[in-house]
Figure 1: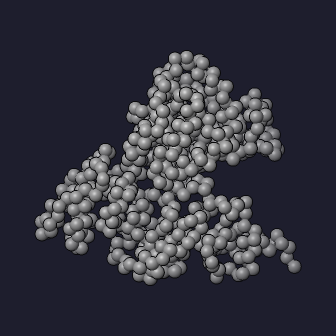
Figure 2: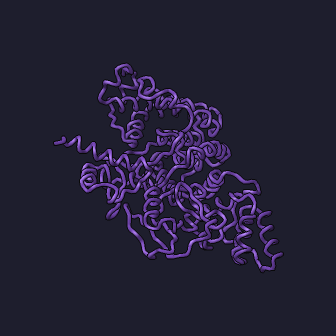
Figure 3: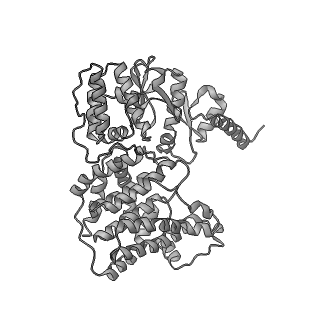
Length: 507
């Protein structure tokens, strides 16, 4: 009789075969009941709904959402293909989000299919799929993106309801900015006699500064005998004009996000006191706060650190040659890396207080901070030096977050734009809040993004004359929820209020 470990290994082998085929959703019929129950008992799969499962990690507690959010799109693809074959596609609104690279997990995924039941299918963590009984677009108007059947960009724009421009203005302006010339849209407008839609699209393009496209739509429709009266579907005129040059939708979305977030930040964040006159005293205060800052920042990331460990690595009382034998080696390496990065950040702050622009200083030095965070791990041979070179080259997921960071390719466009916006920003308050939020939203590295984001925040605080700000580990959930509101719901106010509340007792 095979030992329990051998039996589990057999079941894991079956699971691996399924995953090697690219499947995320696991059906009851994909494996025997014995394998399924064994994997379920040991935490290697999790039930999504009756008859459907996803792979999971044994050390992930039942209430943990990371495995589900990571698997959501692959599960939706497999489930919908199994249920409807190829007779389905995502709604116009969700299709547009995918086209601009917004892979945020929706609370309810809307799907069009002639076989739809017009009712939701409940999934994990209060998410669901709602299959609408609707006819599909023409075959040429459906395309595959990451295996998902989505409406083409022109078809989705035409089918998008007018209220979506009001509900999601940033999303819609980002979509419109992807259109370099309107021929594909015009062909569909003319074939479908879409005078009202043409009027709305002309107004929408005019709103973002694409006057040439707006005029072409109006002139072409009128020349074909259609009555069109330009109507702007947005509630407000865009303050970011895109012009007629096609740019990355990621970059356009980031610029519009920055512009949209400024007003609520200025409303809720306390005015900057101004640069401190006594630079030496300010830097001394930073030294005094180091131990507490290291404890809370590392604890937020899940490291187990103590005051004794922090002091030990500050004094250099650690041996990189024997670190692998240290049962607490991960925490020790993280603490030493934080100490080294903290010193680098303090040096950057010194240059800013002496007159260097904070945005320029951040761009010049943030890579050095990141390298210092993980330098001890390189010295100890835990990671390779090449791992510290450049941005991530694969997707990354944030624990328990519905937000999916931009693709590795998008990161290379977004980071230069982020620092350009940081340099151009005149408000110290906006620099503080968005310096942190936008960096972690982009998530350019595989690890260390939160710590680097908090370093950026404190550099911007110093430039404005604010004190160094510690985010207490006791308020981690509130902190993460505020970041989630900004990432998923495009509401920066909770995060601005959260930081302002922490600062109020220190000013």
